[in-house]
Length: 206
Image (cartoon, rainbow, N blue to C red; front, side):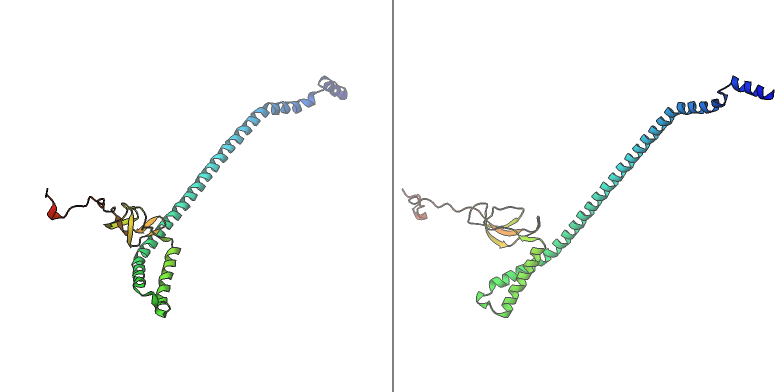
């Protein structure tokens, strides 16, 4: 009797055992769009965060590169200034050697001490050249107050350097010492032949 009743109950609800399985599946299906949207939002947020971090890193790297460049420039400038101060003090020694060699008779060439002075002078020139020092062009050049210092004016092409009194030097583009020069003031005009001035005693006679 009991078995027959259980059988009837089972026949009345043939799908009763499957309800608990269907309901969770429908709930999961309903929740899928919300979960996907949340994942997309989270992914977008992480992308933006990564972009901000990358931008900050690139900015920091650029700042560091600029800092290194600025430090190098400052260091190079300090080195140039130190070299310039030292070279300026050496130039008078070079001048003295030049004057000494110019005053000596070339026939002394071959003597040990004379050749020694010339060798010292040449070595000093090479040291300055290797440091970036160069001579300022003067004689025959147009007078340029940036590179030349006029100490007198003389006969010659107007506005041109006609003689060099003391050499000038540059360190790169920086003038260490301007060249001391004589600047041409133009040639004196001579009266044409036949129009020469009469002697002073004859002036005023008719």
